[in-house]
Length: 71
Image (cartoon, rainbow, N blue to C red; front, side, top):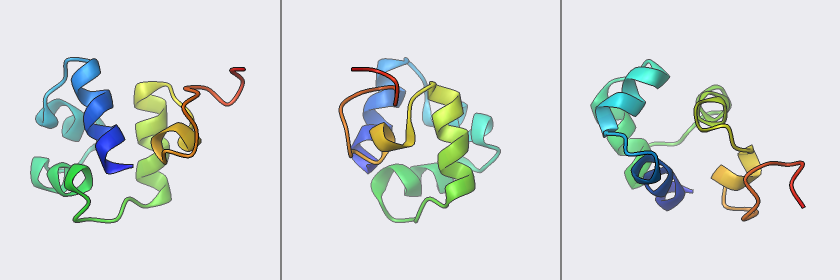
């Protein structure tokens, strides 16, 4: 999951600070999410899904499908 977070951020051309601001957390907290040093709780996972417009399964690396409705 953590590698996927970084991939998504880079694909969207975003900085860690931009994503942290969108999540309402500090850059240090976001860096810990992306490095796997801090657990991501469901409310933050939901924010990330909405921010990137992808499914939780995609962010959790359970599927390569961006949307739960994709085939």
